[in-house]
Length: 141
Image 1 (cartoon, rainbow, N blue to C red):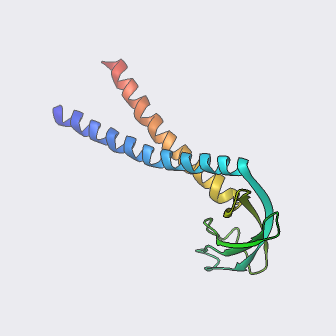
Image 2 (spheres, rainbow, N blue to C red; image 1 turned 30 degrees about the vertical axis):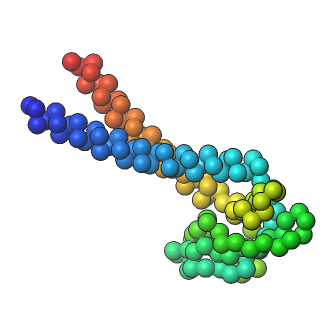
Image 3 (cartoon, rainbow, N blue to C red; image 1 turned 180 degrees about the vertical axis):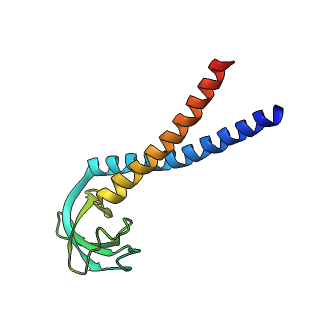
């Protein structure tokens, strides 16, 4: 009986940990994107150098001009995938901070919105499972 309780507690703690590991970083990534986007200026840049292959993707080098006409280049943090694999010269939407134009990202719905939301939902489901299961056990006793 005592070993069953310890085993159940261990499973709940592991599930809770995985839920938090999925939920917290993905929520932070989504939140930081929303904050960045609210302060950013949107322009179109172009792919200077495509990286990786079509299946595994890569992080291309992007060049863009700020509002003053100065050209900047950066390597995208948003990894390309089989849905979106830009080639050299392709136009991409770039978001950058007006007061710090070197801080720029490629506006990728998949990388900054869909991907984090999937992990948020998975983490929330695990947390819901742990708390629902714990609540049922408390009510049963």
